[in-house]
Length: 164
Image (cartoon, rainbow, N blue to C red):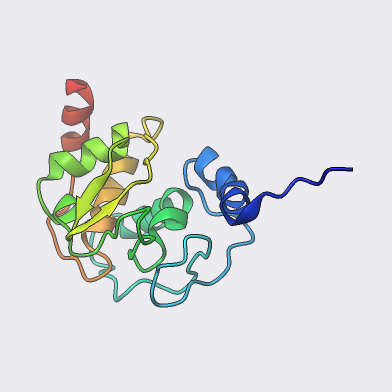
């Protein structure tokens, strides 16, 4: 009788497939990540760095981040080494608003070079999010994990969405 051996790569794919299928939504059985953020299977449940509660709709943005982004980008915004880029102190988050809005709305299927490292995992598109939800989560990311940047308005998201 033959037995099937998945090996480490096959097992990793089986473990990660549900998260990618559901748009990187967190699972109920997330395990804590170590500070390095280099373990592609573990999910950090620690709180992000100091947050700015004075920003409008910050709590809504955090809830959206937790639902859609946390599994891939981690609670600390540190990402997952080689797969999902960090969100702290990067040009994609702190640079042009349009780029961040487009990535959230349309996803990304290309490897991204972020802070000198390449991240190869595809990011799903989130066109189902309303203009307000995209603005809230983008503003949350731009003002969490040590980031400080101008808020993104629903009108800015609507303008980019209509450009397609």
